[in-house]
Structures are given as structure tokens and as C-alpha cells.
Length: 188
Image 1 (spheres, rainbow, N blue to C red):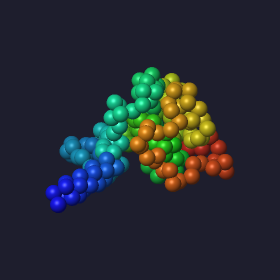
Image 2 (image 1 turned 90 degrees about the horizontal axis):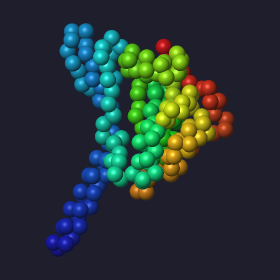
Image 3 (image 1 turned 135 degrees about the vertical axis):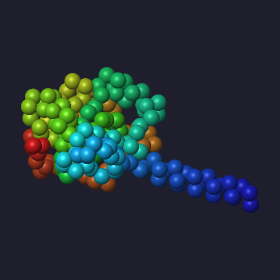
Image 4 (image 1 turned 90 degrees about the vertical axis):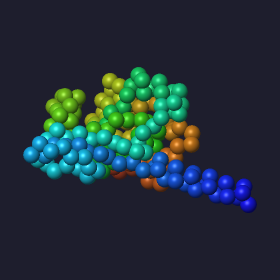
């Protein structure tokens, strides 16, 4: 009886821990027109100042649990992704990175003027998203082959770490009939 209670308790804890690990959200910080600082899980209004965005929860990857090859690639060639809201190519790019188990930093190019200026500096003036930077390599727009080539060249494994479900495994990757590599959206 007692061993059954212990087994049920462990199963319940595993379920709760699994659900908590999958939870991820973005937290926004901004200053309104009256100088009041706000924190929210919804994007700030357009007139907000000093906007910053942090990804919280399930997006965090403990480095010590990553394969050695991924840890080394992260140190030598960190991955940064510039996106915007309601951007299909951005979603497909994010899905590709997650399916390979690549840790990355994401910036919303429209979240603030500073983010947009950082993107324009990297792209030489264009504000097109998605934009992927892998170490020194830069890829404008979404094209799975180009993104995979940049990640392969940086030493990132093609498969996610063991025990990590491939994100979007049920979704098909971009098909050959998808728009060309120059696809993207102007950000302003």
C-alpha cells in the first residue's frame, strides 16, 4: 500500500514537472507616457518607451545538459534571431532552430527602436525579418537550406540533444514550393 502511494506521488510530481518545463512565455518591460514602469506578458502599446522583452520559462536550456558539440558551438558561434510578431517565416525559422536543439537569443525587431537599429546595423540598413546570425555568418530571410548550412558550418549538431523532443516534429518543414530565400517582411 505504501509503495503504491509512493509510486503515485512520483508519477504526479513527474507530470507537474513536465508541464512546468514546457511552459514558456515572454515578459515585456516598458515605461508609459507618465513614467510608470510596467511588466506584462502581452506586448506593450505602440507609444511605450524603453521596451525590453525577455523569454522566460521553457526556453531556458541548462548548458551542462547539452552535448559537448553544442556547448562548444554556442561558445564559438552564438545564435541570434531577429523576428517580428505575426511573421510566418520567423515562426518556421524558430521551429527549425528548436528542432535541432540550437539554443538561441531572440530579438523582436519591432519591440523598440534600439532593437530595430541593432538589426539595421547588422544588415547594412535593411530591416527585414527573419534575420539569423550564427557567429559571424549572417542569413537574411528564411531558407531552411541556408540556415542549416550556417548552423552546420558553426558546428551545431543536426539533431536535438537526447531526451529533448523535437519542437514542431508534427509540422512539415518548409516545402520546395515555399517562397525563396529573400522572403521577409520590412519592419518599418
